[in-house]
Image (cartoon, rainbow, N blue to C red; front, side, top):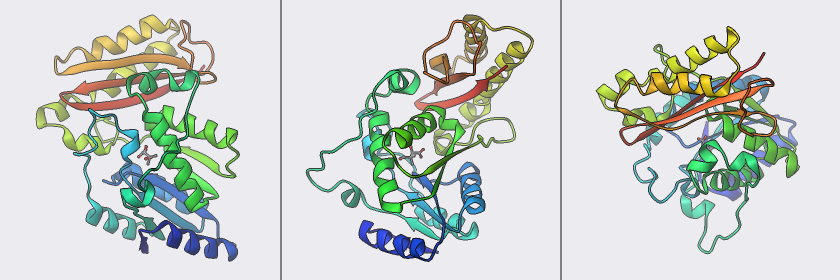
Length: 282
Ligand code: PAF
């Protein structure tokens, strides 16, 4: 496994691999790797010959009052995990390398998909994500890139961006990996106190109950959302940011779940913002 910090060097090495006919798999991350990331790496390994993992805490996707400064940075540990899982290259650029002075070109995500859920709550977040992912795609030139279903809106936005900006890349979305008690794995789970961690699985429990009700025939979004809210609000430690059901075709909120819909939740436990979701499909 090699570790590369410069864009020029990463491009040169990857181009040489491509000339030799190797298929490049890519897993973009912000580090603090956990089993969720490992499942993405494993998937990339199955689908390609040369796996690149980027580790870069991207400042442009954090709002001014968000956790950029305290976001966990665990590079030494990440390196070991990548080594064990046969990653070929870690791309680990500095902020200066990715965003040199006077950097001023961004990929703007517009339309309904950017205006609901996390797009409505985290101004500029998806602009930062689309910008850094575009840069990473241009540097790594992957044949296939893997994203997690936990960040469902991000995955939809990236798929749309790839189609609309003609990146010749296959996007694969891999299912959410969970702790034994159902909590979706996330680097941000590290922030939780013992007390917060103990009640964090309520989000998954709420999603499961909504799914159960949906399977039994309840299709009214208001009722399904209320069910989720009631369960999460059963702990006073939670503060719901949003509970929403949107059509996966156009991201419009739905009143009635008829076609494939995304039930998505964001909730604060103290200062930690957790997200989770599930797809409701007949
Ligand atoms: O999902 C993440 O970890 C980040 O949003 C990503 C895709 C690595 C871009 O910084």
